[in-house]
Image 1 (cartoon, one colour):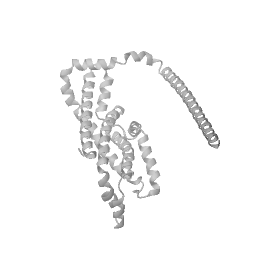
Image 2 (cartoon, one colour; image 1 turned 45 degrees about the horizontal axis):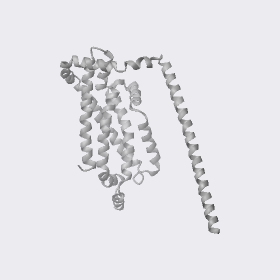
Image 3 (cartoon, rainbow, N blue to C red; image 1 turned 90 degrees about the vertical axis):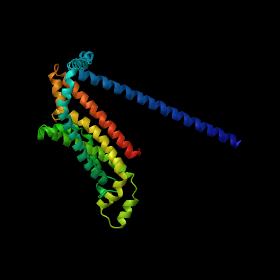
Image 4 (spheres, one colour; image 1 turned 45 degrees about the vertical axis):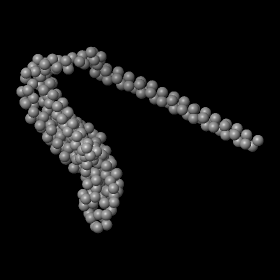
Length: 290
């Protein structure tokens, strides 16, 4: 009799638990539906405000979205014979863009190495300063390169230097986070062995940590170089030099200069594809060993 009573109580308890779980699930779905409705309402109202401030030109311009690309392609086809000469003409600007990306990647990577080691638990020279260095990296990668570049252009004037500094700052913050995550997985036994013989912090990092993390660090550095090529081209639109500046001028002139736009796009596309394949090949060799 007692066994039957215990079974009945157990089934009643499980039924109550099931009902409570279903009630919580229904409540969660209701809250999720309400949040979705609120989100859609805010999205629609925000779009209406933005469209009104834009003099209602969105719906008028949406039908013309393919007109500009078609004009560029048509003019590029008509003047296809001029493309080889234009490719050579804009090659120095492309080299300037690559130089901006390369220098900013090198400077940013060097800063990222220092910041990552100073913000890695078990490796930091000043453990209490780890949160400070981590928040510093958060701030460096939170601000877009174009914002930093605009501020620097206002202070330093136009040219490649503001773009290089802006990209280097963002690179240091982004790579510092990645480098720190790699360093946290490093084996600390070599570091402990070097500490036992009185090695300095720099010697422990150079001999105990760097050989372990260098392949992954270099892989991330190559990946960041690809990103910085695109970033340096984009920053050319705000007066930072390079091929992006030439692209902006060609597009501002409009029809009659669209063959230059086509040539610049071809150079950018070929360059990005080339360095993407090159860095992917080297990253596979470094990380996977093939």
